[in-house]
Image 1 (cartoon, rainbow, N blue to C red):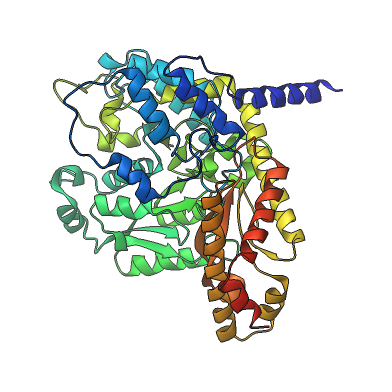
Image 2: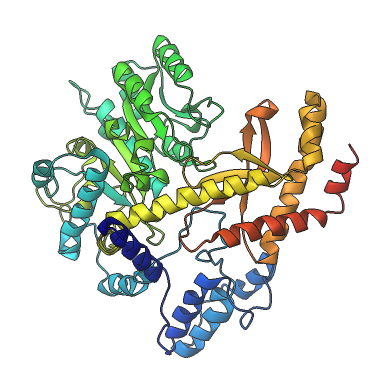
Length: 542
């Protein structure tokens, strides 16, 4: 065995160990850790809950609005948490939970989270986070380098600069995207002559001063809903997020994007930002970032990449080329709580120009004083926990080659599942995986043949029944509790762009096996036969 192969095998064995939680201590609170650890092998055991309760039943356990007048013993309350909360939680760490972008966690995250909570550092101010502040700056520097690949001298100069910032830690992609647009907006509508800038005078006066008839954001119709929330908060309105059509591979049509830029320019409407999506939420596809960067440069527009899901792919030397052009973006969003395997609440945004965040700088006399290295002077959120410590630990413990192996396995597992679906005559693959997401549906072979020879009206009738059958199967599979896939509605080109209900699968859990994927399809086949309404109606059309 070569040295390279031995190293790869050692990394693989190490990764399997860190995603297998060791037995927790047999203490009161240790019981909760023990139950959480068992999730990795599957859903929580029947000794706690015989079967999943309906949400309405669970709500009855949390129906009292009165704050208790008497204290509880920790042991008593722990039992309450075990039976009412842990037992009825969604077990996202299960290898058969493959429906959402919620990652399994390495075992070391739990004790490190205790450390983080116990220290209770507040990252807004260096006086409450003496060590965590430089640690967070380093992590942001590491992620900035992952995206932009600047040299070490660049980071020595800017990473710990009091008056600059390479980015910001956020609670998630929504706040990260908002922060990117906030910086772009304030730099675009900056102080000029007697005008003191949008931050001081507001949007109405800013548009009047610069003589723009509007401000918009451009993104493909696969853009995340958080972009509209950002437009709402920033005062430009949700309707100012303009969707550009996508091609058959769910990537933005760059010709239509450029045409829209020309049209808006003639209308005297300023484009605040063009957004490239690196890992669409529904299908996992990546926009042609290089081509978008060309258009952004041509029209002198802020180029933002929403890589909340796909950004971690940069850790893989093999698949990094999929994101070619991301290094040309003015700002990039990445969620560490997705494919970097840290808990919820760890998003970040990085900026190509460390000086760009000066446009949102804010100070106060008792905190965030000028010249200090307080992180809060360049962030939307004030008080924040030290989530960067968990990213810092993961980057060191898993390492880049370890992350590469995880990323590669996820993508290749999705490719395997796509092949498996194509081999099943009664399933239809809707979108081929580019990252580790794919969509498909149950569609009997005889109905597929009928669809290919039907008129548009007949196709629509058949697809309506298939939509209802897909919903039926997905709901029943979730209720059974053996496995979970999600569902969504996406435009499907082969059906004239009709919005179609499909199964959506996310394969990021390293413990999800090929056997589990086979079982998921087998269960869906069985559930389809249980439909007493939709399947018989479909077959009656033959």
